[in-house]
Length: 102
Image 1 (cartoon, one colour):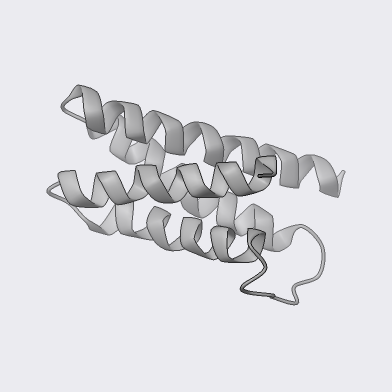
Image 2: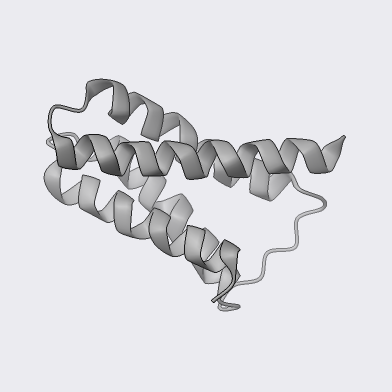
């Protein structure tokens, strides 16, 4: 399993945990949707023709921003850990997409 596939799979798992355990399902749902798109792209099930790293920048931001908000509001160990994993992966992907543009 390649690194980008493992990161996308981890994103989907952490976001699914937050959707199931969080009272607010909108923000984790956005991260789950972005993670599912990334996982489908990593596994080759989905191909999107978007020029440059803009798609990866948008998907990384769609994971990082809701994850940071959920992390800030998290009330237990499980949601805090899952939100931290999501925030790390989203910020990593956003940073890599920005560095690819420079």
